[in-house]
Image 1 (cartoon, rainbow, N blue to C red):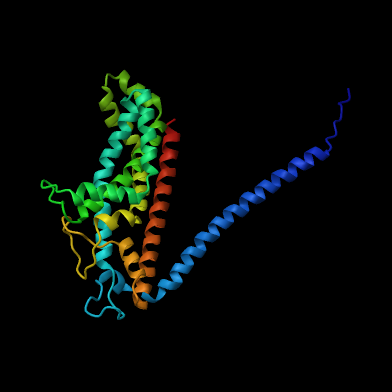
Image 2 (cartoon, rainbow, N blue to C red; image 1 turned 135 degrees about the vertical axis):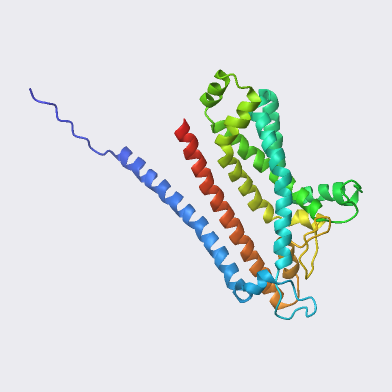
Length: 304
């Protein structure tokens, strides 16, 4: 019994489809290469301009106030100030952001949860300068005797402004990760008679902790580079490192802005060097967050 032999021939229509498919792939590759080239050019141009000021003194010394414009000094107060601002913002935004995400994902009615997600997305799209003006009116212009941060700029006010920027990022990322936690883990806990809040605390959160840390890391990377809110809440230049959050502190973004307007060439180089340090911090933080997110997804996928 002979089998029918079928010969497949390429038609003109198939060739056109194949051509269009390869053309689309080529366009996607070129777009990705262009985006990567812009990043490489940006980092390279900043590094070239910052090379003359990149040294140990830059991160270990304060600016040379007594010889303004002369080579020397560094941005140590700005590095410490940025660290303080980010720590304050993280301490404020992470608890509120995670609790908001837990309520929306585990307890809130569906219609209310949709509204909270919508307004978090709106807050995430707010211009940072508007947030700076809001915090200036709330914490700097208006006297707040309990916190002792009224009528003057301070690290508290700057950290609070950055926390408003971080809050929607932390909340939305945590919501997405909580949604990936398999429902059978919750159901198994309920079957053992465990209450809902203990299930969330002891079962759901430990499974999603990697994604929560990832969202926090991404929010820190964004907040560390914000300048506009600090112009209203925490602008300060000093040759000394300060750890007092009730006083204004220097920051890397404001130092870049201030030095870029300076008439002295060496401060221009230090502005580029500060920008390079900030870029490196954001890149390392973003890559770390991406690696942690991939690990969290693989872990949750294995649980499924």
